[in-house]
Length: 259
Image (tube, rainbow, N blue to C red):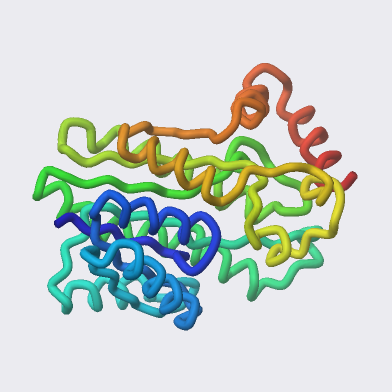
C-alpha cells in the first residue's frame, strides 16, 4: 500500500484531500498543529475506509527545523512516503510596514522553508524508488505582486517557480511535482489572514468549496500536471499579466485588494 503525507490536514483543502487518498486505498500520515482535529479526521476516515491506515503526527511546521523532526518521526515508524502534499500555509493582510515581523517570519518559514525542506527530505527517496508525486499548494496570488499581502503573495510565487523548476529536473525519474493554484476558496483562510467582509472575500460571492479544489488538485497530481489553476476565470486572470505592463498589474491587484 502506498502512503501520502498531508500537511495542514486538520481543515480545508488538506482535510478534503485526505479523504480522496483514503477513498483510493492510499494510507495516510496527517499532520497539523490541532491534534484534536486530526483525531476527529482519523476517526471519520477509519469509519468510512477501515482498511486504510491513518497515522497522526501533531506538529507546528512554522517552527525552525520542524520539517526534519517530522521526517525523522516518519522514518522511525518505518513509513515510506509516496505522495507528499505540502498544503500547510497561511497568509496575513495589511500594509507591510504595519505588519509584525514575527508573523511574517512564521509565514516565510511555513510557506517556503518547511515546504522546500520536506521536498529535499522526501523526494530523493521517491527518485530512488522511481515513483513519487508531490503537490505544493501555491495560489493564484503567485502570478503577481500583492499590495496589502506582500509577503504572502511573494511566498506563493516562490512555491510556483520552485515547483515548476524541480518538476522539470525530475522528468523521466518517475517523480512529478504539481503546483496547485486555487483562487479564493471556502476555507478558514480569509478569517485567519484578517480579511474583512467585502472586496476579494465578499461573503455575497460564491466561492469553490475546499472539496472542489481538493478534487481538482488530486486529479492534477495523479495526471502529473506541472501547474494546475482552479477555475476558468482564475486561469484567465493568472495569465492576463503576461499581456499588460507590470505596473498595471500591481495597480489592478492593489485596487482589488483594497476596494
